[in-house]
Length: 250
Figure 1: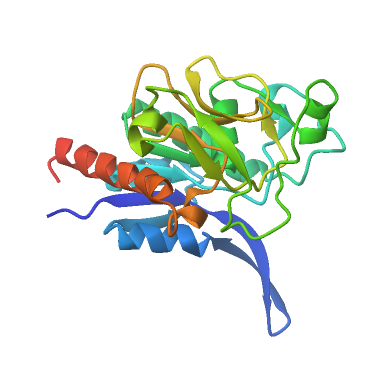
Figure 2 (figure 1 turned 30 degrees about the vertical axis):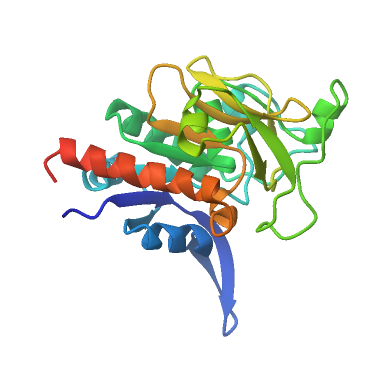
C-alpha cells in the first residue's frame, strides 16, 4: 500500500557551529513526529524554482504550508510596512504563494498552519492586520501571542456548524494555542470562515467550492497528543492525501 507523501514547507534561520554561521532550513519536530506516527512520509522542502515546485507536486500527495518565524510581506496585500510588522522573508512568502497556486490547480489537499494560514489568505486576495494592536484600535482584541508553552491551549474558538472543520472534529468549540501577532483583516474572496475566537478574530478558513483545503491560525501539532479533535485534523490530511494518491494510481 502506498504511504502518503506530505510535503512541508520549512522555515529558514541561522545556526552556528565551531564559529561558522550557516543558513538552516527546519521544520518543527512535533509536526514531523505526528506525520510519521500517522504513517505518512513527511517531506521537508523549500522549492524556490518553478521546476522544483513541479517536481515536488509530481511526488507529493498533500501539502502543508507550515508556520513561520517571519511575517507576510505587507506589499503582498497592497500595504506599506508599518513599525508593528515583524521581520519578513520575501523569498519564502513568494515561493509558498506560487506553490499554493500550483497545488490548487492540481486539486491537491492543503493544510495551512499559522503563518501558512495567513499566507493562503493573502495569496488568494485577502489582507492582514500587521499586528493585533492595530485591530485593538477599532475592535476589542485579545493578545494572540500566548505567554506560555505552545503545547497548552490559550483560548477557545467557536466552530461554524456544518463546516469542514466541524465535520472533521465533531466539535462546536475547540481550545487552541495562539502563537501569532498578525490577524486576518479581509477574507480572500475564495475563502469562508470556519471558526472564530471570542473577540471575532478569524481562526480557521476553507475554500467555498472545495473540501480539500483547511487553514488554521493555531498549531494543531502542539495539541494533538492530548486532544483527539486536533489529532483528527492531521488524520483528515492523511486520509485526503491517500485518496489523492489513489486518483493518480499510486
